[in-house]
Image (cartoon, rainbow, N blue to C red):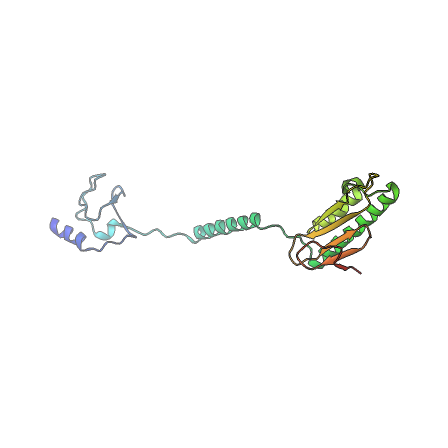
Length: 198
């Protein structure tokens, strides 16, 4: 009988998804083991089906949790990697930039009339200029003020203001001391040679 059990074990094909275990201590065993090396139980009379532990199945809930964590991780990566996009449309963003330039034009003109010179930075103009620049920034535009070098008498007589979009395809705007706003659809800063806004 001893030889018959060994032959049964030898005749069985090995299935890597199934594991053989002792019926007493439930420790993993070699397929041809006759005595359990852990508890000493005699395994020669035991049917082969009793030695095979059932394949563990993953529950649907566990799979759903794993997929949920994977998707959440990917979403978090995308959230931090991609730049934020303004919630405004192209036309609304351009209108905000134009409104900011108009506001700055008024502030610069008032300052020049009062002092006789343009300021060395927009900070000098105060809260109204900061608010206009912030409004443009919220719409995806960066305001760049560049005063001309001071003349011999120390006065700044010219300036340029650029409104540069953060999004491709939006118009670039230009304003100078002549008070005319110009724009271009090309992906470059607008200049005094670009078309005048009407």
